[in-house]
Length: 157
Image (tube, rainbow, N blue to C red; front, side, top):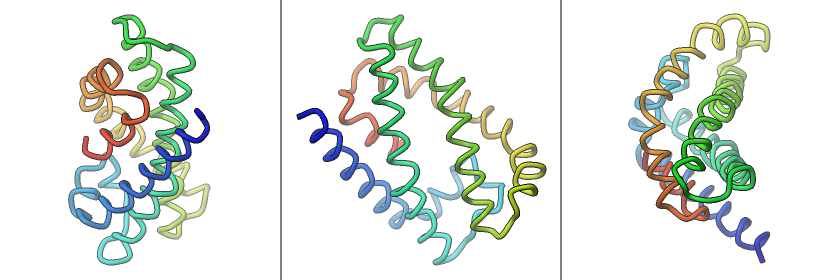
């Protein structure tokens, strides 16, 4: 039953991510912490962001939030803060490296160039933005939103 719930939630989140990326491409690209690392613009950029949202972002968020809930189940202040800290110190860095690598490959860069130029130049900028923007939303998300809806909230965050 829990597997079925995960599959249904994951599918819904993937669809929402792709739909949002298609409906609001400018906001999706420009408000992203990755806005300055060369994501394509125009129709290809919109389609690429829909791909990223549906096939990378949504599955990662579903996996990660499920793992956080297994590690620290509950909604006490300690549990919520533990999840926020784990997310910002472990989950976000992994996510940003994956996204920077995928977008770099899509932009035609070699893995070496992605590592030496894109990640080294953009990673801490992305993390700094993440540390200023996401912890408050995650406190609300982890303390008030059911697990099956958390990823959907992030699509609007």
